[in-house]
Image 1 (cartoon, rainbow, N blue to C red):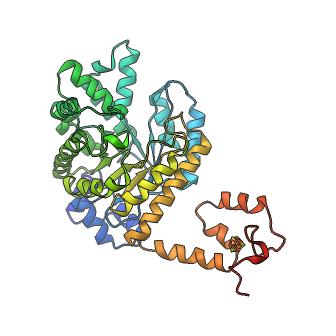
Image 2: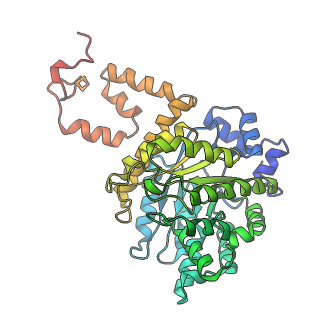
Length: 426
Ligand code: SF4
């Protein structure tokens, strides 16, 4: 049983195997003891707020299947709750393991409540977005975001049932000083990160998320919220990848992981961003090392800057490589990245693309059943069993649509080779 006496991490540290751990062990085809030990050590997280009831619980971390997150949410220029709820549905139908509400337009409280009520998967947020929106609504500058307001919002969101929160605690006066000394091509692209840099540079005051980290841990503990330690200095172009500010922030996050574990709070570390292929392995190794093997949650990384409209591909290339080296959780990128707010089709394509990356990595990671799944698909392909291929493939909807666009004269082949089909034995 789950109790509110102690967090899941504390429970696991006390050698107790509760229902959440049992359900994850079953889903992952791994032993309950493996999951319990991972949660206790902080190498596995199961983000789940005390105030939520969920049908599907996923865990993120070492030894597990690579998971996929889909971001949804309004923007100041496009506020349509019904559409965001439709995005939630299509993301989950397409196989997203978790979703994040990144809304910055409209009634954020109402949008979040509706998303939490409708979502059968774990939900994450970035509370500083709401703090920024409320600050601007009062006619103030972003740089005037108030620490007390931010903490009130964090507590309110935690009370509502948010399972994991991105908190940019690694941006502090020291890391901003490093940022200010190292000129970047694209500056600070993380929205939350850029807000906090503005606050520190304008006021000279410390980031409240860093300065009052113990208070943040208290709130996280009270509701069992998992902290996703945000990469506010993630590079937004390959030229800025692996630079001093990015690594300085990562080092701070690693120390904060240890403090979270001591408090019995689950935590993971977010990662870049835009990273060229030849730096991905180093980024993952460093993040695991400095992060004390905390689960890694990467956005991509995008391996080139030149392909707007195709960034679901540039990020999936990076995501597959990053996950094969140990990244545990991939945030999808849609074809709309860098262009506009994604629509329903973008969400669908983004989730499927990230799932392909995750699965490709799982084959290399040796995740239970991953390689066998490909073997089964290949068996049906060789047999030219189109129904079974449709059933087994990652996107049956697309399979059916493409297959029927142009039918071959002989049913057991396709129009690529027709009667010269080399899958036939004769
Ligand atoms: S016709 Fe060509 S492409 Fe189609 S199944 Fe046979 S070998 Fe594959």
